[in-house]
Length: 403
Image 1: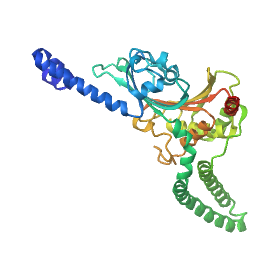
Image 2 (image 1 turned 90 degrees about the vertical axis):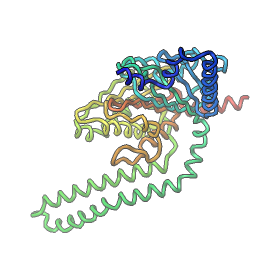
Image 3 (image 1 turned 180 degrees about the horizontal axis):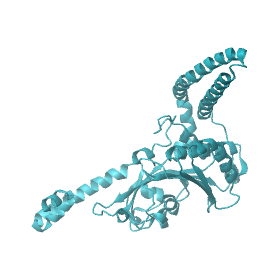
């Protein structure tokens, strides 16, 4: 047993275990080597364009690279033993640091968010827990959090230009898939219409067959309409028609649209409204599309007789809706790809649903957050700014003109 324990020890543990056997000269050489290796690693991390923060279980900063310090507004000589809640409260709130010790805290967190300090930037956050190797109790195993921050401000600024340059090839790929998908239902429609035409001549005697054929036609037409609808929304995004709307009403309308699917799987939707009228400035139809896709994903992730929770409310900066399921969850290696075009983990998925969600939320000045733990479920947070994005743009323009 003792030999096995030694073999499981880390290289650093084995080195530290031999310190008593080292003389002064060899100890000095070892310290110099460790210092050089640390300097090398710090140099490598400092040239990375992504910001890296390492937090302990209390939220204190234990390591940060140069880009990480720049993004949160820290000076080089003032970057240790500082709590993330104090130096970057927006990031701390997005990471859910106030519930980091909660056993239900998600395994991985991804956020797209805007920060206002030290300057207004758009960030993509990806955070994973750091676990202690010597603890078997999962509740005590959380040693901290590793956070990777990508500045996507410029990426979002020229997003439309990239879309235009890539649209031709994307449309060709989509068109090929759509053409293939349209073939089967169209053939089926054609065959059943021919049968229906023949049966109409003997309607009195063949009434049942005629109804069955008509039902098949309607079903295939609906399938065809769904394929075309997703295709058009993916390649022809429209500018939002901003109006003051009640988010709760939009949620209720969307749930009604999914009523047949929910009933078929015996899934209930629990509506938890923090306020009676969570008002937002948005395009009602586009927000309905966002909720339709997110609730649809939750519906696919859970089993029969499950409950999907939809929580709405208001905080200091946002009107929010959270769609909570206790389904299969998202793998660590997949969560960073959720918004990528054509990426899907579903056998019959087209991979553009969350891409549409991301685009619409961005056009509304909102944020999408995903908290997930494989095997436990997923929370999708939709945050809408309390002030109209159009009004914000007008105020910004007026301010620039006055200067």
